[in-house]
Length: 115
Image (cartoon, rainbow, N blue to C red):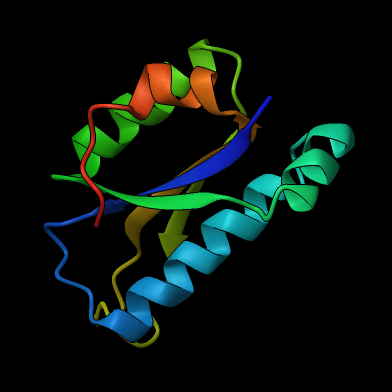
């Protein structure tokens, strides 16, 4: 059984590479705290497979995270405080799904394209 994690990132925000990397890291780490320890350990042993996927906007991000949650997957939603990049405005940037069984995650996010 293969495990993976996906991070869904909003395209419409046009974050620079550094900002996007930080947001992706926040999402990846945050969802681990909500995850089953055995699944996390198996995922780690397999190399921590992770895919960064594009979503068009906040509504699409929330739609996919809601679908993942309804499918029984752990999720995390990241909202940036706006101290550096978003001019003082808190902005929802990305979300994570998993780690979990690859086929369960793909059933929800398999149609999204890599970032």
